[in-house]
Image (cartoon, rainbow, N blue to C red; front, side, top):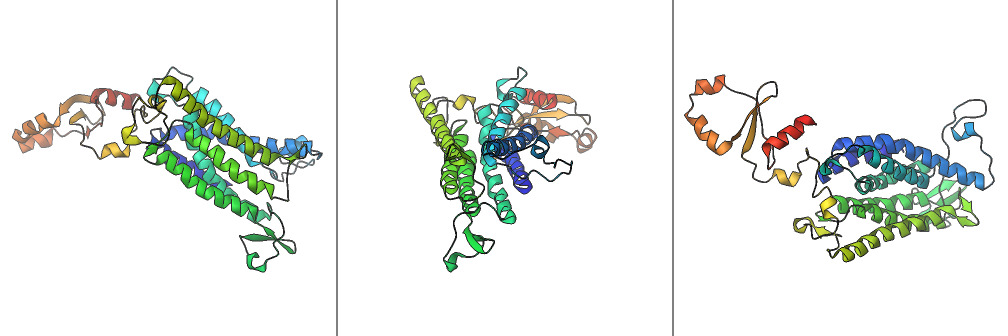
Length: 352
């Protein structure tokens, strides 16, 4: 689980910067969302276990025995972790935007959910292998000796059982690359689309996998809780996409789903609110660095104080006529800012 979290955080950081978000946004998001995810995973497991008739004390909930000995948080449910992450994203959205920030510095809930849940899927791929170490999360008995080998099946006592944790990890592995392409590929969609696809993709996979699980199954009124929640995630994902399509039609704009980035403009519903249209001030997309660089350049002294803004084309000719000794004596640190307005870009950078 720790390895899954670490890989997810690292992936989030670099993917977000590529998409127009500051890396610090991801660090702040993790500080809020990760503890709530762990708390949510614990509450989810304990609540439904109590409803099934199993007693819990508060020390046991916190991972202690009645004698005060810490034994660990045995019992964490991923769906509770997902709900905790969503709650954290909501809190982070209001906390991050608590000031009257310029529009291009604001971060919406959907932008947080898109990058967060794309890499939560990666974390789930890795974390599921903890079930293999614990000898849990299995299905029916495997009688065919050709399939009695790990990780296709797992040894439980004297029997070989279906390794449903492995099939979920494999499903999530392919799902992660789908989400990664939707987030970083050249075909873009509205904010919240990646989160919606996560709900549909993970919900479908988890529903059929939980249907064949035989151990540690939580029930509510005779229904498997995880199957029920999986269906809710599928419905949620479909509803988000359907809502976007309906709102786009009503607004008389094009549906912003899987559109080539080069063709994007305000004709697509919701584009003007995305980080593709409003990247963070200190973010320069990789594709923009390959373009012809702006000829405006800010000259600063050794203390970082701005001296002037010059144009390379005009100043280069003057510099050529200047004696070499004078050039050596007047050398200063320079900083080229890739921006349409060099002075404003310089001020934004140093204000940050």
